[in-house]
Structure formats: structure tokens, C-alpha cells
Image (cartoon, rainbow, N blue to C red):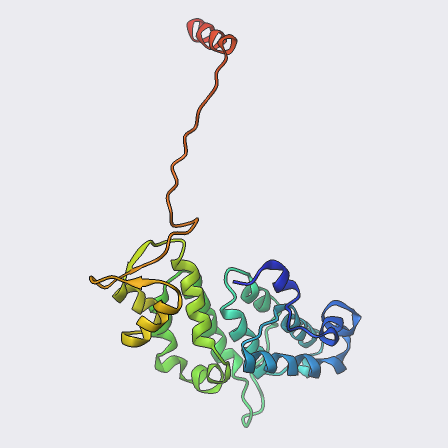
Length: 241
């Protein structure tokens, strides 16, 4: 999981992009092409820069003629796996209501895909991981898979990262079948994935997660030090009550 400082300024962000994101340059229409190119670099290389992508949506908001639905969908796809940061909701807040495309040759795919992407995000937020994979692999999501996430390098692994971030603090031991449904992995693929995490699978098929600060119960002893004058006041108060 990225730190807050990395979220504000990813190490992969160039000085040129930093000037567009942080300076007045992001307000100029001519810069949208640079930001869009940077987005597609993120798509191809597993990089991610939320603030740069938000700058694109802001430019679209003030300049409707620049609007590119494919860019918007790719931004939402990248934000989908940003949990626990609120990137997806930030992106949604910058989307305007748009009328259906009047060009039958180039229909706008966003109105049809936005409810689907929003539902996928909700399922991840609710930790309903098997339901996420079921919807994502359904016929309903075929267009999203074939036209967008297939181009987003490491998308499914990024979803699995979200799963792991939820599992680590919640479990010490989890059945391999259950984890398989969470990760959409089975057989050797699941074994290899668990091994890369440094986890083990026992003879009963239970995945053992190493202890961490969140999944380990630590007993604490609270000792109150009541002085004699305080005790006297308590007894006197109870007798007068």
C-alpha cells in the first residue's frame, strides 16, 4: 500500500507533470494531451498518479470539447484498486452529467459502463470479493474486460492487492478454498501466490498468515492507582448518596 506522501507525489512523476499538477499549467487546454499520455503510461506500466488523473477530469469539466470517454474509463479503472484512499469517489465527483452521444458511429461507452464500474468498486469496498469476481467475469462486464482492463497491465493483481490488504489484519488462518474465492486463483496459481506473500498452507489446506499488529491479540493490564484521600472522598460520597 502506498504512503500518503507517495500518493501526493509518486516517485515516477516527472518535473514536467508536477508543474502541470501543482501549478497553473493544469488550467491550460493544451496540456491535456501531456496528461493523457501520462495516463496511458500508467496503464502500460502499473504506475499510478491520482492527482494527475484528477487534473484531466478537471480540464474536461471546464472544457467539454476535450472530453474523451475512453480516458475517463481508464482513469476510473486505475482508481478502482486504490483502496483505502478515496480516489474513486474523487473521480466520480468530477464527472458531469452528459447527454447521450448524438453520433451513432461513435457512441459514448461511459453511460453504459459507469454503473458497472461503480458496482465493482462498491463490492471491493464491502470486501465482497467473490461477488466482485463473479460480476467482473460475467457477460455484463465483457465490454469492460475486452476493451479496457485487458490493456491495463496488472489490473487483476491490483485487485488481489486490495484483497490481501483486507485479509492480513482480519485473519490468522483462512481456508484455502475461501482464499481462492477471494483471489480468483486456484491450484498451483494459488500456491505460488501464497508462497510469494511468505504465507504457508498446512496439511489441512489452511493458509497460515504470519502474526502482525492487527491480527494478534495483545493483552493489556490496566492498573488504577487510587490515593487514600481520593478513596475517602468516594466512600463519603457513597454514604451520603
